[in-house]
Structure formats: structure tokens, C-alpha cells
Amino acid sequence: MINATPVPILSDNYVWVLSAFGSANAVVVDPGDAGPVLDFLEQSNQECSAVLLTHHHADHVGGAAEIGQIWKCPVYGPIDESIPAVTHPVGENDAVAGSRLTFKVLSVPGHTRGHIAFVGHGHLLCGDTLFAGACGRIFEGTPQQMYDSLSRLAALDPKTLVCCAHEYTVANLEFALQVEPGNAQLVDRLVSACSTRSTGQPTLPSSLKDELATNPFLRCHQPEIVEAASTHSGRQLEPGVEVFTEVRRWKDQG
Ligand SMILES: [Zn+2]
Image (cartoon, rainbow, N blue to C red; front, side):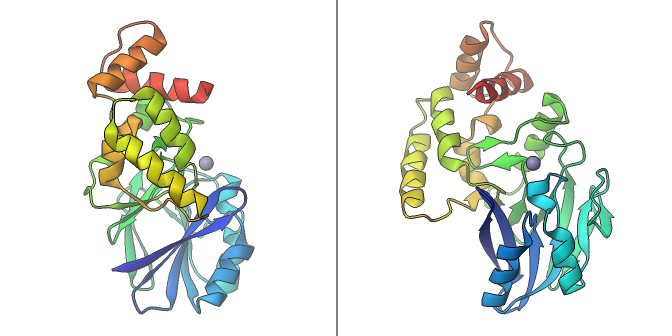
């Protein structure tokens, strides 16, 4: 078992700080800003054993070099992206280790060309690929790549806890309800997320099981979503990547 804490930074990012129960050594994921993470480590009496980076965007890597230098620890990042702070480039199937924690690397291109995710100890660190209730924008890859990447994540153990890098949940679920208004579990999830946010708490981590039940980007074969996407596009779409592409386009317009 591990502790996983989302440390809020910038406007709506989370830096995940992970440690084995009883251990003072932490792994830090996507530190876009060093200050709040260093403060958290100090307040919780933890040391940083490794920094993990999912992709090159500044709000995910901005504080990585400083944290790596202060703690003299490895900075793991995607082998197919150029990130100056990275000391250990990694790709598909590599293992990354910090303290007593080990994570496997999955290649999940789409948001960026070389985006990677880390999975281990029942947790998925997915950067800007999978969000609670949605997925990341497709900046550098193709819709087919993003669809394939999400399908890989969807095939993990449903009990996996999903550690997303942004607090977008309420807006995502509001959009999801436009796409699938008949999903009662989705309605419940939105009510619950609004209540959580009203007290200032993070809605994350979510569980893959909840994503499979309510995230339209993982449900592109559901008849109601196929129908809604087809109506939105003005032509009958095939379940799967065609529906995914239209739902992504629909959300981008919103
Ligand atoms: Zn990003």
C-alpha cells in the first residue's frame, strides 16, 4: 500500500507525491512548480527519491530540475521528448524506481508525441492523457493514437486509482452529461464531485472502474454515445475511434 497525495500547483495542476506506508522517501510526479512541492515534502518530513515526468509541457516539468538538484535524485522522463531536466530517459516497458516504489512505463502518445504514463502499486500516473470524466487534448498525436492510448489504460485493473494531473472533473462531467444524459451513475458522480469541490477538496484520485462507467472517451461503443456523436456530426458514425474523434472535437468546441 502507498500514500498518494495531490499537491495543488499553478491554477489547476496536481503534483502527485507517492510514498510507501511508513517510508519517508517519496516519488514526485510532474512538478510544474518546485516551491509548493518542496514545502509539502518539508512539512510531511519526506525526502524526494525520484522525479517522474509524463510529457514536456511546462506546467508538468517546470520545477523538475530544481527538485532533482536539491535532492540529488534521478529525473525520469519520456525518451521521445526533449526535456532538459531529464537525467534518465525511459520508454515502453521500462521500470522506474524510487525508494521502495517501482512503476512500469506505458507509452501513451496523443496529447504529446512521446507522452508516457506510469503504473504500479495500484496507481496510474497518467499526466494529461486520461482525466476524471474526459481525456487530454490531442496536441501532437492523432485521434487514433489517443484512442489507442486510452484503450491501453482502460484495459488495466478496474481497481486502479487514476492520478490525473489537473482538477477538471466538474467541467468534464458536465460535458459528459451532454453526451450521455441517460447515464444515472454519471449524474451521481457529478453531484458528488460538485460537493467535494465546494469544500475545496480534490476530486482525485478517481478509480478506473468509475471512469469506465462514466467517462465518454472510454465509452465510444455505448449506443447512447454513438447516437449523440452521430447527431452532433450530422452523419452516422461507427462505434470506436470515429465516435471518439467526434466527441473530442465536440468538447474542443465547448
Ligand atoms: Zn499537457
